[in-house]
Image 1 (cartoon, rainbow, N blue to C red):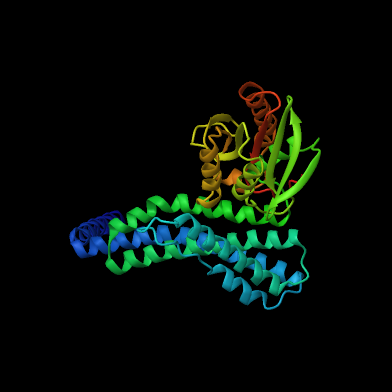
Image 2: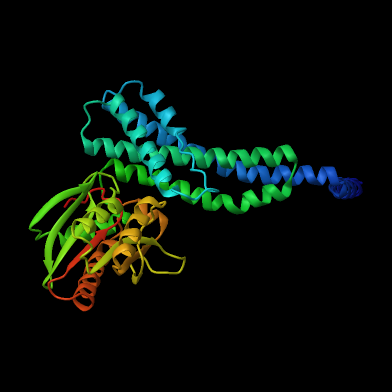
Length: 371
């Protein structure tokens, strides 16, 4: 009797399970319920990633607040909130006349505003500390922007009940999260005053400056030095180290060329460049043009003065990933500095006459790299 009872009980459980499974399939076949299930599954995935981005954004804010408190800053919380929401509006582009001048004016106005806010809060800080705080503020601003943009599209997808929009967010959020992780790590690197991958150009310039006969500042936060390479006078330009700054290399080069009445045989720019997946970190490549990630004003200043006097422009780049560019300089990039310098010397020896003048520009953030 017990065996029959157990058999009947097992049959009932099996029947109930089958009916529940059929009911589940029927429920999912209803479009509205199916859509709701899709939205729930997708939103749970992307919101988990959004939470990670928010954690990194909040962490960056707290680190900057702690640094400001250690410097006895006035209202560190208020300052960080202001810097996190800072923005620069692009100039009108439908009328291209003088757009570069307008862009330069706006970009420098933004830089000056951030710097003045920090100086007002920490009036006794030295220039190196100010530059580190500026970069830290840029990190906080970038992470805050990434978080708000992702949150906006997730909320919009929910509001519109659009699984297609949610699928698109799911596809791009790993890339945005990777970008956020890179910015998060960069904050510690710049705070400690270490060279980053993007310091490759300034490092090559600093190596060429070792035996310089004189040094001066041709533009704000930018240094130049004269040295002799293979019987040519070489004027080396880089951002003023060890500040965490890119300086104003375009303005400096334009001024130097004009001071020499255009008698410059060649301009060589050295910079870090983002590699494609599959390319090797630290690989060196050579090309033509101004190697510079500037939004426009600095780069075009070199192009204009070179075009005015017919000066050839060479580009030497060292490839690296985004994270490598803004965090601690990898050994492969450090080793590549010697190769890049050798290539610069080869270009000078083979493509310029003895006794001529050449300009070499080490482009990039000179954090931790002196001169």
